[in-house]
Image (cartoon, rainbow, N blue to C red; front, side, top):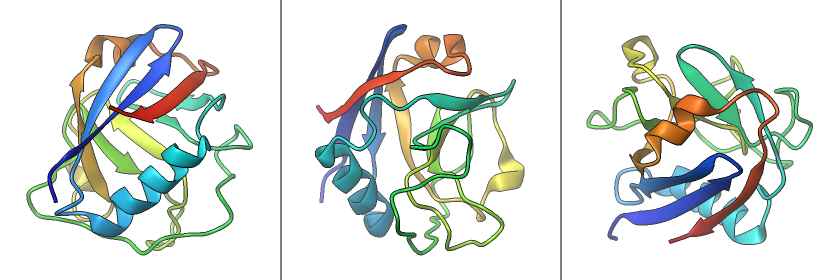
Amino acid sequence: MATQKVVVNTAKGDIELELHPEKMPITVENFLKLTDSGFYDGLTFHRVEDWVVQGGDPKGNGTGGPGWNIKLETHPELKNVRGALAMARSANPDSAGSQFYILTTDASWLDGQYAVFGMVTSGMDVVDKLEIGDKINSVKRA
C-alpha cells in the first residue's frame, strides 16, 4: 500500500502529513478511521511544549479517547525526529486511541516506545506556531 496523505486544517494554516500504512498498518488504519468519521474535527491541541504538540483528545485534557485502544506498533525506520507524527499513550504501551503528537524537535529517547506513523511534509511552520487550545478545524485525506 502506498503512503497516504492527510491535511490537518487549523486557523494558523494547514499541516500536510504523509502516513506509512505499509510500515504501521494498525496505527494508520485507526487514524484514518477517526479521520474519515470526523472524530478530530473541532478538537484542540491540549498540550504544547518546547518539543511537542499534542491533540486528538475529545476531553481536551489529555485523558480522553475514542473508546478503544490499539496495540503498540513500532518500525525501526520511523524515528521520533522533528516533524514526526506519532500516537500518544499512557504508561501502558497498548493504550493509544486517538491522541497524536507532532515533534517540534528530535526526541530519540522515544524511539521504539511510541508508534511513529507519519511525517509532516508541509506546514511545519504552522506546527511551530500552535498554542494550547488551538483548534483542529478538520482532518481530511488529501
